[in-house]
Length: 227
Image 1 (cartoon, rainbow, N blue to C red):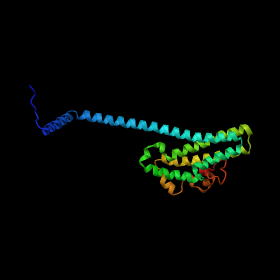
Image 2 (spheres, rainbow, N blue to C red; image 1 turned 90 degrees about the horizontal axis):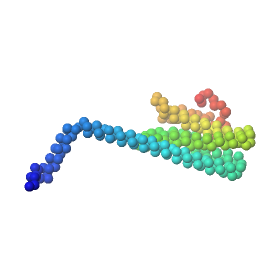
Image 3 (spheres, rainbow, N blue to C red; image 1 turned 90 degrees about the vertical axis):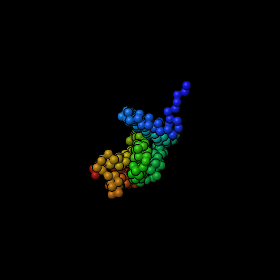
Image 4 (cartoon, rainbow, N blue to C red; image 1 turned 30 degrees about the vertical axis):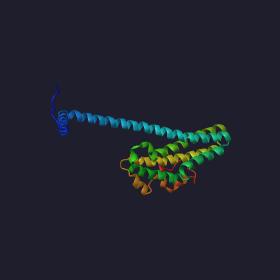
């Protein structure tokens, strides 16, 4: 014989189910909350791990892309066998990335970072303008140094080598100016926005601008005031 229904109407059954759930939660509240917290912690850790993995992969792809472009430029030099042509290729690489004004490029990088910091993408480190600028310039410097070494082996300390070394010093100064911006991020007491607005960044100095823009040669030894 069928068991008689304790709750005959749909409304009664729904109410009974809610009460049953409430009793279950009351008895197991601590365990349920602990499980939820554990799940949130595990999910957050997995999300951070995935983000870090994506960041590393993105940086590798971007670095490989820039290095591939530079290698193609270097191949043009080998095809032509003319050191001056390759030096021009290196110059064009810098002009292409900085729109012909490295000092403006560095200041824009600072401004873009200040905007980036306020955006929802600020937790995606691989999109950081400062980091990306550093990767681009480091690749250019790496290619220039390899070329300088080759010139020294093949031609000795000639005008070709001196021009390549001069360009390498210029790239090092550009990277130094980017590092200067980054130093404000590592110092909790420093205010990057205020320094930018007051023209206190290294790249905002008139002499440094002329050096990074190629209007004047970068000295072999940088002055103490720039240190």
